[in-house]
Length: 352
View (cartoon, one colour):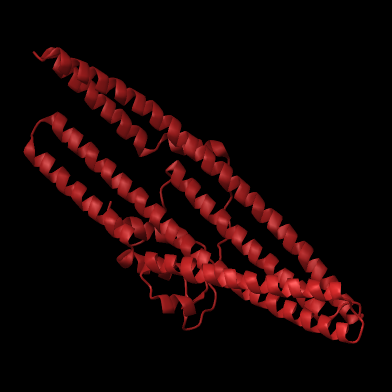
C-alpha cells in the first residue's frame, strides 16, 4: 500500500461527517492541517523512507534466491513492513489531528481566561469603590485581590503553554508557519459520534488482523526449515537452533493473539468512558444553561450585578467548550479503537 494512499484514507476517516462551518480568509480546517503535514511532517517522511528501504530489501531478496522458502520469507517481510508503515502513518496523522484540536482548545481557554480576568478586575474595582464608602471590609477587598491575581496568573500560564508548547508542536508536525497558525481561526468542529457498538464486534475484528496471519506464516516457515535441517546432515547445534526458533515462533503467535486482544479491550474501555463523559458534559451544560437563565432573571430583578450575570455567561461558555472537548476526545478514542481492532479505513473515491 502506498503511504500517500494510507494518508489519504486516514484523512478521509478523520474528516468524515465533520460539520462544515463558515470560515474567514485566515480559517484553517483539520483536513487542511493534515494535508499540509503530508509534505512536511518528519515522522511521515521517515515512514515513507522506511517503506522504500523495505521494498529495496524485498527486491534484493527476491532476486538473490529462487528457492520457494526464501521467496515466501521475503514476501512475508515485505508485507510486515507495509503493515507497520501503514499503522505508523495512521497513528501519526491521529497525533497531528489531536495537535490541531489541542491548539483549538488552547485558543478557547485563553479567550475564556481573558474574560475571567476582565470580570475579576471589574469585581476588584467595584470592591475597592465599596471599601472607600464603607460598604465593604478588608476581607472582601483581599478576596477580590486574590481572585484578580489568580485570574491573571491563570491567563499567563495558559498563554505560555500555548506559545511554547501547543503551538510549536503543531508547527513541527504540519510545517505550517508559526505566525500563520498563531493567527488562524481553527474552524473544524467535532463530528457526530457513531454508535460505539458491542465489544464482541471489535474482538472478532481483532482476531482477523493481519498480524495473526503473519505470525502463523512465520511459524510455518520455521517448521519447514526445522524439517529440512532434520533431514539434512547438519550439526546438533543447528538442529537445536531450528527447534528453538520454532518454539519461539509458537510463543510469538500466542503472544500476538493475547496482546492484540488486550489492546483492543483497553481501547474499547477507553472509548466507552469517553462516550459516557460526553453524556456527562452535556448534562452539565444543560444545568449551566438553566443557571444562566436564572441569573438573567435575577439580574432583571436587581438581585445580582452585571458582573454576576457576565460570570454566569462565562461559566456557560466554559461548559460549551467542555462539551466540545469531550466530543473530540470521544471521536479520537473511537478512531483509536478502530485502529486497535484492525478495522479497515473506508475506501477513497478515485484512489486505486
